[in-house]
Length: 198
Image 1: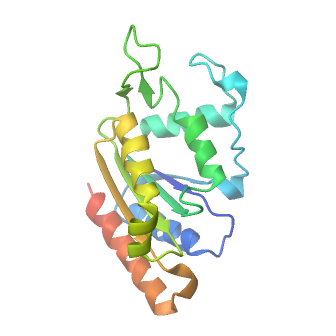
Image 2: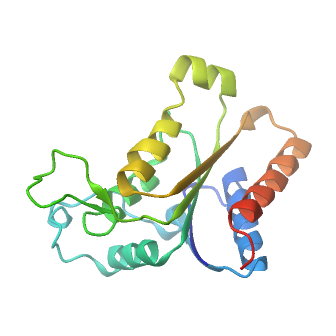
């Protein structure tokens, strides 16, 4: 399988980066072809320029490459922290600029954009790993777990992705080395279960 792996965290020593490394290693060991983008390390510019808004816009080479990576993949793995109930700006910008009409979705003829789109990423699997400093119960009861809605409904549902899995590891700020090691082991298991060797 072709797997697109996206990391959005500014620190190379972060738990997020360690999760991404484990994902990459596991997928490679299972025989998958992995395209990896560390958005922060690459300096991905999150601002969606007006010139890219139109479906037929001429895209910068970098954005066109990311769109091609997304179209060609069978699975998308995303690793990011929960910041303010959202992904970091680099990842939000990636969604804005890469999940484009004609790439990730399209509206049916006669629909000017007010209806329900046809997702073009059918058959693809989305796996999201998040880290958080909020306990899971408080996240669910107080905040309503906005990341679940973003990934499952707003991204996967809108773009037609067939399967969505998400894991949150928390509380990171007070975690022990043993807890972090267990989270990395869990990440390995989840990746292997979702993307078994061909």
